[in-house]
Amino acid sequence: MPTRASDLLTLTREGLYCPLGGFHVDPTWPVERALITHGHADHARAGHGHVLATPETLRIMAVRYGEEFCRQRQEARLGEALRIGDVTVRYAPAGHVLGSAQIAIERDGVRVVVSGDYKRAPDPTCLPFEVVPCDVFITEATFGLPVFTHPDTRDEVRKLMASVALFPERAHIVGAYALGKAQRVMALLREEGWDRPIHLHGAMEKLTELYKREGIPLGDTPKVVAADRKDLHGAIVICPPSAMQDLWSRKFPDPVTCFASGWMRVRARARQKGVELPLVISDHSDWPDLCRTIRDTGAGEVWVTHGQEDALVHWCGTQGIKAKPLHMLGYGDDGEAEPAPADAAEPEVAA
Ligand SMILES: [Zn+2]
Ligand SMILES: [Zn+2]
Image (cartoon, rainbow, N blue to C red):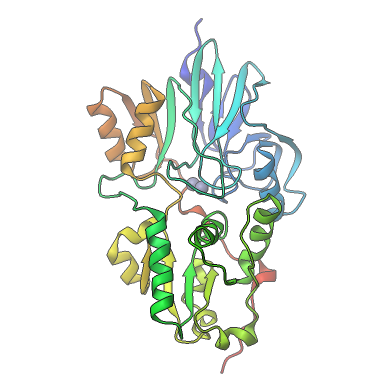
């Protein structure tokens, strides 16, 4: 009997499952055998038996969860064909964060690609997205509405630097996710010629050190020490989004709150979060890139995992591409809800 896409991938309580290979992809519950696309907490969880992922993703998981994050780990080399059960598996870069990959699952000439999270925009901290032609393409739709078009990130970073030049007495506190976004903002600042230190909240430290060890030049990134905060005039400080509204951020000199996120395209969201300087920098594809990518893969069928599924499913229909939403729970927001590691929290003394 010829192989059908549903033999290669199906949806179970734990997430996407390959019956012929006996493994899950980015399961949201602990499973025996997991293939992981990238290190964000909603995709890479601790407690699996066997984990296959890129070397960078495995190292990210070890930093976040400790060396014991699974029983057994295996490195997936990009482009290398691996036989698992009755299928062949191949990892390809996804352009999302360091180590992020798409996973192609294949048998008898039928190929399904799980893209995880991905973007097409340039990112100095990771390999660019690679188009993998396939029959079924599994995509996210975080920004799956035509209103979402991301601007050039260089302009956003220049906005930040212009604001520092305009307000040299004020500290600029940039909220950014600890994995990927924070390091991308640092790398973009370096590309634009910012050669002063970039100050880090303690929660950013371990992953930023990991990026540096992986060969991403981020320059001088000292950790903010509580006593020094009041002296950081004109400094750029990067912290987790959760710290932006904290007492922690208010101890800086007349802070300008900035937030680096694709959601900053929505003015109301920026206002609601009290963000003075919104920076539209996203690690996900915008609407035109979602559509372009689906077309580029040549897939006859698209499954949409999470985000704004309906509009993308509808668009596929207008292009003669079969599509369905998977309404997957447990994905999204790249760890916004993730608590900062306990060792990174600085005690706040009530005044
Ligand atoms: Zn992600
Ligand atoms: Zn995600």
